Image (cartoon, rainbow over all chains, first blue to last red; front, side):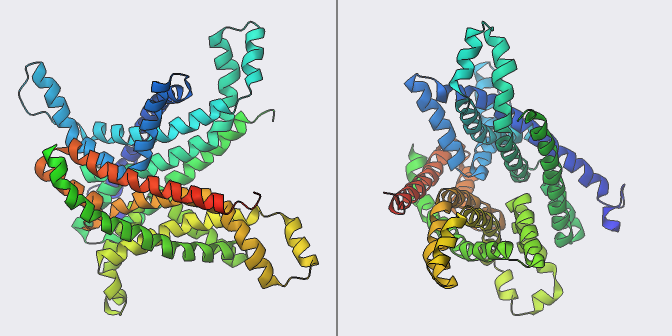
Length: 230
Length: 223
């Protein structure tokens, strides 16, 4: 257990902060995903054909191509893209894009593709009568969305959102290839310097299990909260 | 554009390894999945617990951790290194297949389990009443129904496994993603390579998707 001591003698503190990093990346990624999903789900549900195609293209590509390949695209591509834009504005130097940002962005885009399908399904599952009734009651659009449609949507979508969260959380391990120090990368460093990969990778597995277990509990509580009255 | 044409044969060549890894892991995974699904539905408590924790652990941790434990971690175990099993565990290829098999097996066992659970009791009772023996009931009634029931979910799992094989590149194997990364890091043209490699992956997911659709139609007894 000396290997996990807190402070300079062990890897306890490093792994603790790495776990926080994993949580941070996953949270930023899932919210980027929600943001994209809100846009692309509305594209998929719209009656305009070109927007439909756009939405389908997004979900097909990012659910069909391996996560690692997407990460490589952003990892190698982002600084090139930023420098290209900078050149237009007359800046010629080398710009390195932050690993946290590219990681969260690439995982977020993948996570968004899954969320899009979840959001779309949730909206479609709501009875048309609910929309019509709200209109007849003379409720404003904002009020009936926030008070009637979204609460019902959340109840149905929560189990799927929980799934997307688990996928996103596990996908963050792939960002370790870009050098961002999250659980996997920290374990790799620790395994390399102590020559004890079995211990550190097993411990990483335990950390991930702990995170997935915690989030499962949290989502179960949320589901209970939103199922009141059913 | 030039790079896209130039890299295409190399990427196509690497696709063979990707397909190989996918098919082998799925093949072994079916047996592992069926085995643990049977354990889970058995009446003996300890079997249920083992099966539950197997699927919980392999579904609750990233595939990357699983590969690293098997490839980097197990090499540290003294008795394993001295045993005949070392032939298997020192190769990244077999380690990748073991990791993928165990991973897909966990998901497959859940798919099979829920498929068996959705079979209506009345059907089994009716078969029992007709005097069919247990083996007959299993192979002629339960299994075909369960296979049909699990097809859509299994199709998804096949696609997930195809994508999962990209992690083989982290243990030095040169699969489609591995070669794509190599080309990207030597040419610094990520977009072009991504388009080619991504299209190959999409083509494969498209094939799997349609294959499952055709199977579903074939197995639709109601028509």
